[in-house]
Image (cartoon, rainbow, N blue to C red; front, side, top):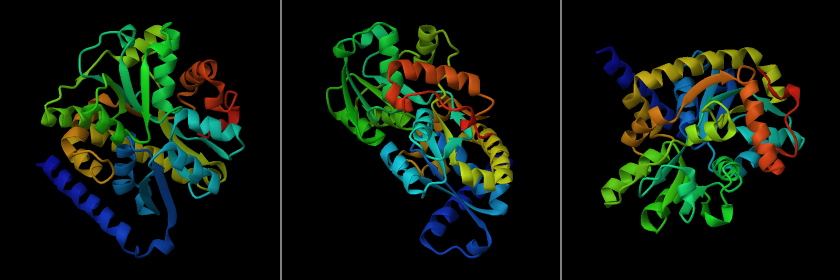
Length: 326
């Protein structure tokens, strides 16, 4: 009974959010604007729930808006429009090394990109000769995929990689064209599996990418792929708000894991995926909420791998010590 009440409450809140995006907000002028620009990936669901029912929402005008691709994210930061944003974990470092006044707040997933195939593939070596499709060239999916190939001694030229501008485009092409593998962030990976069933295309999860990563790089089976970064001046002016946001995100994550169906209904307001796909994605998204300082050692190990693979993806160097804001 309590779960059903919670579900109805959050559905009403999510509907109210949609209405508020189209109409002027009463009393907005009396509250601090605290907009978070989220990625088109499942960790934004944790942010969505936090902005809807967290303690910060009682004292600030909290909202979540989704950016479409990393180029839009970079442009928003450069223009000053984006103050708080979810970002691939390398992008924040790159932006800081390019002179942008940003730092890391937290990590929200330990590995969100899933490897799907039309036939089962049990090891990275079996990717040789395959046609692979993924979104965001030179961003997080591409970084981790090609770094793993290189570390395993697999000739990248023997893997045919095609890139798309968005995850949704990758799903569509994977299901309708002769691609063998799709490397997709959740919830689009789960959406791809369900859509494939409706189209008569069998799609399966292949080998455990995180486990292969751990074995290849001698690390924990963790890829700290994305989290929140913020404008440094905005953070310094709202330190207490960010501490409250951290608590809200932790509470939201617990609620999402305990109420996947209700959380999925909220997610349909933000992702181009149906509620069943979003619910199915939650166990596969490796969601977490950890401050940058708490995961600093693991992040630096990951950044070192990225730096060895392609220094340009970090702006040429590891982050400064003051990159980790909290």
